[in-house]
Image 1 (cartoon, rainbow, N blue to C red):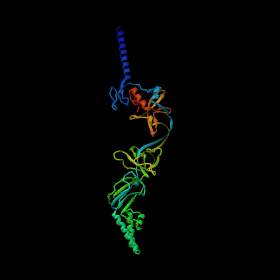
Image 2 (image 1 turned 180 degrees about the vertical axis):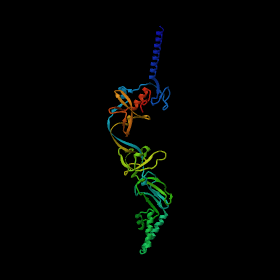
Image 3 (image 1 turned 60 degrees about the vertical axis):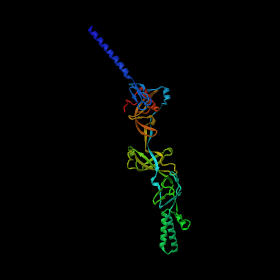
Image 4 (image 1 turned 120 degrees about the horizontal axis):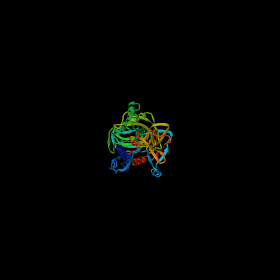
Length: 398
């Protein structure tokens, strides 16, 4: 009898323990967590506000076994969930870096005063104006110029009066050369010789076409010899300066051909080559400047315009590629959503390869024939977090 009582007591204890374990298991399987509707990566154990947007956290139930998402046809339609079957194909990798157009410093013309004088008239009074070669820039008054003209005419008369005396011919030639150094042209000197030109005013003309980038004087101002007056930037040819990071330096070299797309003219790509690589990084930015030259005969491009440069141009054959927006990237890695059967979606960690502005190579994680979500991937991740109460990438093999 005593033996039967002990067996009955032991049986009751085992049943009680099993019941408690079952209740504990059910409690562990479904617990309440709190997340932010706008930032589903925020998971908290108690109510509160989102640390990012300060919205009130909403409760969600977490389940230990998460195998994916099940959506109805209506949910798929409302979420604009679209998929595509992946397969092997060809891929062209183009790595683009940012660049900026600037003036070609080697084509810049600085107009400076060749003699002391007063700026009598400025024909251009603001920067940014286009000028043509041979167009009048300014007129200057100079008594020194007038003195040189008189000296030239005096030597000319003496050489005509004494043609057998070579000294006067040499002095006349020297005076003419000095006038040319001061800016007078051959037609002006011939006009001076014929008596049609003899004044203290000299008009200075543009030596090249371009854009006026600097005006350093004003009308009525006296200038000394060598004073910079104007600066004209040539627009027929521009510099392209690209920003290269340390990880990209192995992909650039002087003479390498590159493809350029100027913003606003993406449908008109340009081909050029690298002319110069700066031997040092710019300040503390860890950016290396790489320079190329592009032709601009119609002045279509302007300095300051942004552009993109393709450094790498490799072709891959028989690889799996998917649209770039199908990949979800986080600090722990990259993942995609795969449709395994009707209405059921699962996430997969993937290994990324080459990439361009439209597609990315997948080196691992999915195989030929898999149906990958190409539209609505972010919506699926948010829905997963709201339903499961955990980050979509939590627990995955990184």
